[in-house]
Length: 292
Length: 308
Image (cartoon, rainbow over the protein chains, first blue to last red):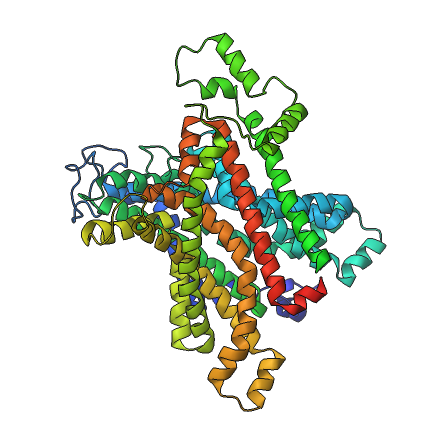
């Protein structure tokens, strides 16, 4: 038994040689990764980076224009907008991760189950997904918030549920392709049980597609949740959540346009970051779709 | 063609059916007693009144009975009355629906008029700097939140330049909401047009056109464009649904009196009959529009017409 490192076959068969390098050689992937890393750094080190506490009133005079002390100005309570935006990165990351987590796990289960079970299970699950998909995510999220009531937690759940049909359909389509391959049929004939078929054959082969969808999904989940907060159906004041901040800034539209400018810009940059990263990943993981 | 129409109609009916069930169940998923929550804001409601309301909403029946009652009333055009003001819900929604449709349709025009030419241009200059620049612009376009874009447009055109009114419900008031909603979707159309055109340019009949020596412009406009436009029709149905969804947010920024604004107010007031009616009307409109667009697609492309 030779060591893996000295075995020439093992070396050449190493999976995804330099995935990161290929991702970074793609401009979209590089810029996207950069933006996402900055977001993560802001979220992790918010107390060190922010000059003021995010909810501290009177950090400066009310409605100060942006300056060196208050980089993004102050709001009507004299809270430092830059600090609030820095702390807002935490909510953005949390909302995106939890909402996409819900959509991904539930969607993956539904999609794999439908592709594996076939028959009426497949028909019911996928027709239902089609119908819900046609309702659009906005309508499903609104219906969920209408039932659960407005709060940040409920907005995350609502956006997560709203995403399920897309993830279910994607997982289903990818799993169906895999289940049609000869090795899969061979495995069925050889008597592999459902767990083996689902977990060792379908799941690993569906995952790359799902990772791309989830990365792109982070951007739409962040956008949707910020939209709910903007409408007053998500995070409530004084939470330093970007959508809620933008909504509060509307009241000072004329006198202090920076109150709506910076939180919105923050959302746009982060959403762009995840979109670019997802695009880059798609190029790397699926070279066939390179020019689309 | 007949079978295709039947299948498409079946899918549309299924959508409306599922939404009617979802809407009936919705009120039972509310944590706590929906009647108590609805009337929590109006004080001094006696237990007898609560029971009477429960009865009038049919909440004292079993769930299948409630569903039949709901459908029976729906067939007579009755979606119940609003919690506050006791107005007929269907009438209220129908009064507001034309505003939402006007917004969605004009946003669709904006999106098509901007997106399709840009996508065509990018495909024609595929691989060049213009293509790269346009696709970067598309990426930025789909990343900008509509609620922020709306506020920024409002700030520049209505407050700073004073070219357009800030709020109201006249035709001029439609300009900014339609631009806001249309611009983000223009990016989507640009991307779809580009990839559809690139596919079309690789088709055999386009190669033939090239081979027989037609000028590049003729090949692009007369041959590739026609084939390239078809996929756009197929995604228009889905895009229209997104526009209707986006309209909910945009109506709230510009105080445009559509059903989206009504729905958000209803969620805050816990006016469940209005929320139920809104979901049903929204789903029905989306189902009907996407069905019509799919039929249009079948009529446009003889291959589809014959295949299904």
